[in-house]
Image (cartoon, rainbow, N blue to C red; front, side, top):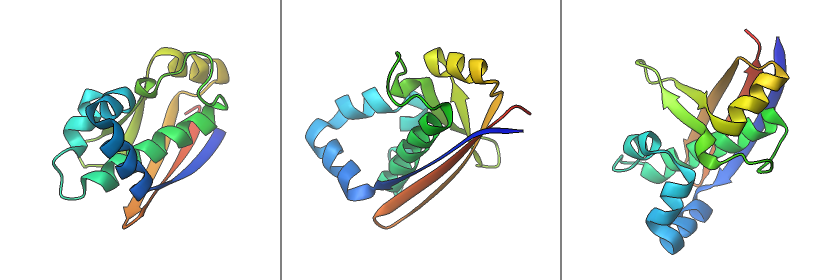
Length: 126
């Protein structure tokens, strides 16, 4: 059963501006080490980072919380399975909120091209 759905779109140039202004501090605050390892150094690094940023925002919409109540950017981690498909690993307060809502898994889809990245997230009870 679907419990919640969220979608988000990110302007890649805005993310690039944040990176140029705040550098590693921004990366470490928003992305887990595994996310940075996956994205940084790729040919389309900014697109990959923006896709994960959009995915995190979409997951927040599934949870219905926004950035309140102690949820951290690092509580929501975008991971890839062996085939490369993206998934989500929740921890901390985001995991507690998902549990209260009955969400056992979050499905995501990410797309990025040129100046835009988009992500959709669906919370399900499996």
